[in-house]
Image (cartoon, rainbow, N blue to C red; front, side, top):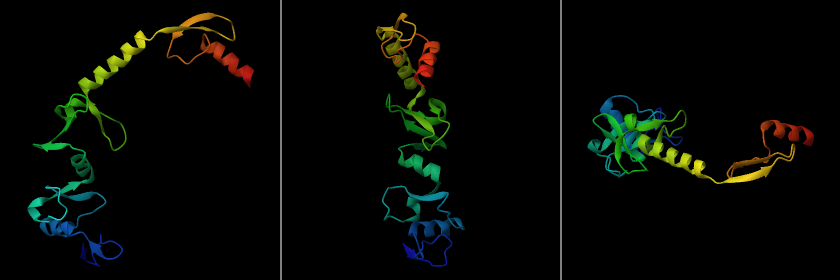
Length: 162
């Protein structure tokens, strides 16, 4: 940290990280720490040689530290299911929200996992219930949490309980 009390992004004591000042001198503008990070390529925060520094957006910096690789301008990452290094845009499903913008498993592994879950539920053994409202005996899958034969009976039981 270097003392620069007039710097617009200095901390409350007037200090600015050395790597940020070096990058600002190189690019000719201030580095806004709210949207940009200065990354150390070799991982050593003490090595502030300009060749070791790279300016990244917050999103890019988060991706690098999550193990993603930037190859020829495209992002790649390792699938947690099969362990292969795959292109993110083509091989992973995109999530709608959150900072984990892509799934951890590739599309192929995600489909396989979904298929295995479906097979589990298909093979799940059945159990017999007797509806407490109408007395109907019915077979339901073992994982089903219902004790009623239908939604109609469930609503009748709910109204009676109120």
